[in-house]
Amino acid sequence: MYEVTMPKLSDSMEVGKIIEWKVAEGAEVKEGDVLAEVESDKAVMELECFRDGVVKKLVHGDEEEVPVGEVIAFIAVEGEEEEAPAEAADEPEEEETAEQVEDKAAAEDEERAEEEEAEPEEPAEKPEDAEEKGKGPGRGRHHRMRQRRKKAGRKGPRRGSRVKGEEEEGERVAISPYARKLAEEHDVDPADIEGSGPGGRIVARDVLRAAGAPGEQAAPPRERPAPAGRLNAEPLAAALAVRYDMDLSEIEGTGPQGRVTVDDVVTARSEVAAREAPPAPDEEMPELEVSEDEADVEDAPFRLKTQARRVIGSQHAIPHFYVTRGVDVTDLMQRKDELKEQHGATVTHLVMLACVRALREHPEVNRSYDRGRVITWKHINLGLAVDTDQGLTVAVLRDAGGMKLASLVEATKELVEKARAGKLSADERRHPTFTVTNLGMLDVEHFEPIINPPSSITLAVSSALESAVVRDGELSVGRVMKLTAACDHRIIDGATAARFLHDLRLLLEEPEQLLEDA
Image 1 (cartoon, rainbow, N blue to C red):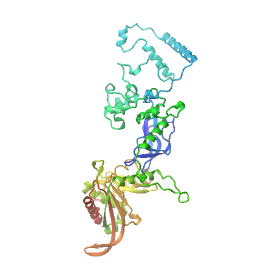
Image 2 (image 1 turned 60 degrees about the vertical axis):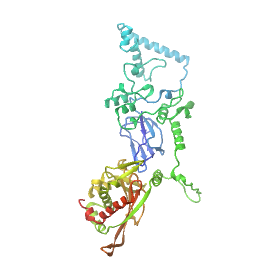
Image 3 (image 1 turned 135 degrees about the horizontal axis):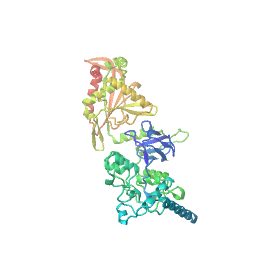
Image 4 (image 1 turned 120 degrees about the horizontal axis):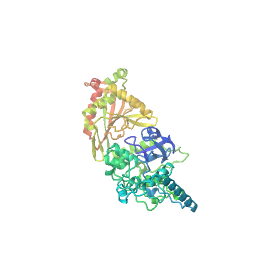
């Protein structure tokens, strides 16, 4: 069974919203098919299918907000069985009527007679010879009966029959078809693998763990809660409970005869998460009491709520301090039209180019602090704040350290277009190591940004306004742009920020040096 989980589409994404499912339960899907539209904190993305199969269950519906990593759908894959605990997946047994018992016995007698009539006589074997070959008397007949039942569409052995099949000791290892395929691909011997599935069956995660393959499935299996007796639950509900370490016996079922359904497990998990979750930072303030006569009140869009959580979290967790420097960009602004015509460059592109050049000289700025770790980035991933219809988003220009002006302009233009269309990929939003936010085109003299993690500095660029400047001891009128660096005081100190801004100012005030080899 293939589990579709809520993907992590950006560094800051903790919750995603299912905008619309593009498939229905029971639908056949192929690898590459679009399953749903999912909204992250940055954009709306298409969620693709990675396996061929049939949609077994949509765990969450349209417009639902789901934490990253939660199962949102199950897809039944051909050749794979549901890897749910057998005790938890058992359905209540129904008593058979006398008429059903008689009919079953007659059918079995008829089947046995047909087989004995068609089966050629074989030389008698000694019991020890049969044991030596790993099969007891009559095993061939039972095997053919199982095959006949499979062709007839029956699932599994008859109640009360004694079938060992693949799990028979000394013959084959109990392993699911998909796990066997993975074992062949990774050149792993199933005999050396300890199974964590029902009855010790080897499942996919066991093979991946033995092969040392990366990914969530390669993690050690969780301890499964021991089911108390025969539990009345849907197989998928049992599988979901195992994944989230939930005790099915404590979940109230709403299905027929009190059966626990997938929805029951999801509801129970949501209730537990709500009880255990710490209060959101904005809940520390008293809720506004607003009457209908005072204002119209509606639920905030998903991305606005996500943005609110993110900036509150940034301000709460990161100690901000600010350093501001005025830059005389008179000469640079005089070349603005020329650079626009030659390279399509705007003031934003020139500031970005200067930031890249300054970061190459100050690698200590291209670092991050995270939970006791200092992360020194190997590349400059330049983030640019983009204003869209859905709010602010940050597009990331990856490995910008070696870019010249023309390539930077081209790459940035494409990113901005994708950001405004809500088409940024996860990689185009991932790990900005330095972020630029520019309000220069909106006649702004000065502003202080909030740090965009994991950047240790977010640079605010204001408008290039006419101002009095002093050059060679003489007063004149020039164009001054104020740059304000919001700095993470856990890893950036005042002197580091000041040195970085000093060199950034020199590059912007001397266009020839900035555009050298551009």
